[in-house]
Length: 561
Image 1 (cartoon, rainbow, N blue to C red):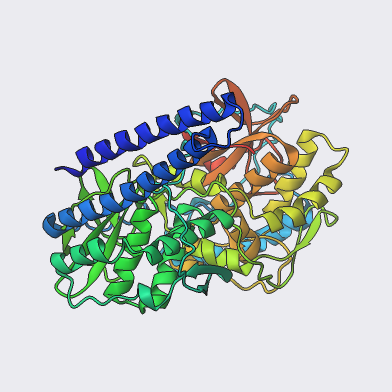
Image 2: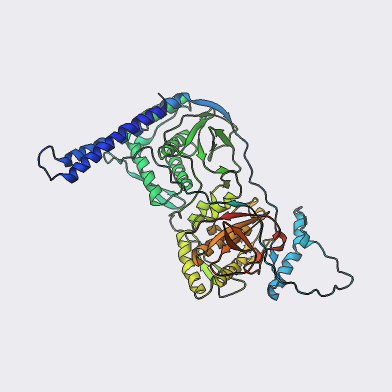
């Protein structure tokens, strides 16, 4: 019998119990209380108990059926080669015309050093750094032309990925209070979690053969103690608002700590908890080691993957192997892991040293904040990815992740107070100037109290996009990081819709004002979005960096709220 038909039969059984339960409930509401054995309330209790038993049997019988498929459904697969993230050309920051004399002098000194820096790293020296020949005679002063606001050409619009509900267990996981284990505490990104687990949850694997794995799934995991372990894991996911990615990290930490780091037992226990929580995974092995491959809705860069039945499966932990024996058995109603982070994760506070960030244009626009190092540690594990085979989608995943609550509580009231009484345009301009900060391509500025621009490749050795919290924590950031963070402030503090605007090698953002605002713009879905570029130093709202002004754009829509 196929597992799908098995599941359908159980669903019919549970649905019939549900109908009896509803009928019993109607009887309870429609009849007066009785003292005899025909009391409708007793019928309701019996129907509810029978339905709960059906739910318990449903999951455990599905697990037993699944074990038989695990015994047989193995096949050799070769991994697809890891796909590197696309490499972007480097666009230098520029200074806007009309910037104050002090800023212009500083910017000129910065730019004068860059030619040698580019040559030393075997990079092509940009035109703006090439030495200019002085004209033999001064040209006649041209009449000042009227300002023309440029409408950027939009060649593609990236819509936000629709939010998806988190995977759920096949059936309700019942807490068992009889002979329960004690809680074991463990920490995930500095945050305490606790799960009931004890010596009766330990098991040994003599090898990684399909029979050994199937026997453990059939005989070991249906035991009551594993119900409590799974129940507690799901409660921790709910308590901390863990995203799929954070929940995966939690299960990995728990099983590695209890069963032993790098052991086959830890992998199998994680696979059990992961699949019984509703996630799609496949077991795999080589001659001696067991692995768990996670199906993902997002394509992850720089990792080997296995393509099966239209899904991508990634080995998120362990040695990357080019060939594995993979079990193709599926579990009912399994769902792929999503890398969306739609709510701020509730992680314990571990405050960093305070950092003061001051606008170089307006010294009064200054904020002193601390970051949650636990949150920064979590975000640093986030893999670079895309959805729908479109590299541009990764920025919306970063920008649509809400800022951590403590950061919002520190910044937003102060920002709103400083922007009180200002127009929408004035408010966005203050925020834009705050993000402009400074440039430090050589990494020589110490203890700067503003945002510092530097290339990811020079800091991290590779391209790395930041979540908003990371831009506020790390000393260096680039165009995409600044644009993503600015979009948070404009959406959350000023209350305006934003889009990210991608030019080849450069990311800016644009704002849909409620009041008339002049400037360069993009049109998207019938609305005008005015360009704001936090890498165009000293620029005003509506000014586009000249070197990208005539380039076609991709507009990335962002969520608000």
